[in-house]
Length: 370
Ligand SMILES: Nc1nc2c(ncn2[C@@H]2O[C@H](COP(=O)(O)OP(=O)(O)OP(=O)(O)O)[C@@H](O)[C@H]2O)c(=O)[nH]1
Ligand SMILES: [Zn+2]
Image (cartoon, rainbow, N blue to C red; front, side, top):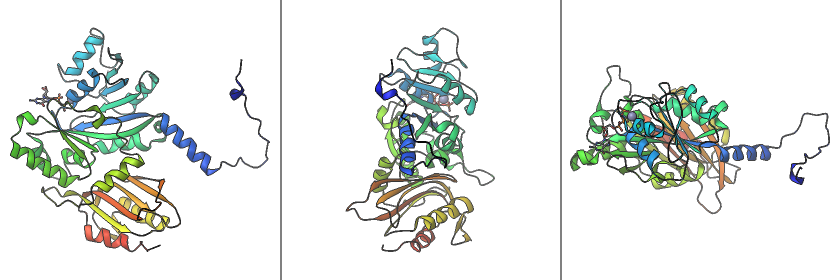
């Protein structure tokens, strides 16, 4: 028998195309997002402790049913062992259910196939953790989860967690490429929302301090924790909503300081804060010029932005507008009301060859007091 709620509402037919009111559409998007399964991307250089962290997550009692995707299976890895506990022998491309309800899968290709396979098991898990290979640039895979229309209704990017080897991290960050391109270790730090500084048992305190300073010089927005065998409070790495409005606002408030260049690699964080208002279209054009054309004021500026986030104070709008970008992809969403708070445009850039003064001066041209 049908409940009253299930009876379809009769709507008066109208010859014109149905008018979808914007607010309803926005609401639907929000609802979809709320239902989507969060995905954490776990990255970090070779041997840093990613699989150790995954295994820790898989064996902890966290009340979540986590599906794990491994795109590699080194001999005798800890997860491989827990998989053979789950079911003797049969593994790899098969999904295995572990004793605490987690699902585990090893696939060579971490691309769309792994995700498709994962979505077939929908309902069996409420969280996804995906380990990239040590030599992966997390940018493309983050973009795929973040904005891909085919996937984004089912999954949403929660954040990027980067594991770093405390002993070798500094060396890895400093490795120069003959072609001048950025090495993966630097990219992984640049895109990180959380950093797990692992193997502190093997590092001297001096090494650790230098490594920390270098990491902060590259990315002053990521939170850092020190661990042995990747034993981290799970709330530090899971469910962080790094691409969600509230966290963004808070972490932008936390670090108003611009870091100084430290390593030879010139990736660093630049923060600009300008009180006042900007025109929405002008601001958007400015962002596109910078991210897509590497231009400021119609002139090439050489800036390579890997990650950007910010709050915009849009003229004529009472709400904050939050900005998120990974490489050339960006997203702008309207969030909380400014209320009595001072209206400040705040932008954080992580990238290389960032002309701090020019960025500030150029954006300042868009800002007026009202
Ligand atoms: N001494 C020490 N060893 C650790 C620690 N964490 C992990 N290891 C060891 O370091 C090795 C590499 O760890 P993994 O977790 O496989 O590293 P990974 O990042 O997954 O490595 P790849 O997948 O090869 O990139 C393993 O032998 C771990 O047991 C730690 O905190 N201290
Ligand atoms: Zn691994």
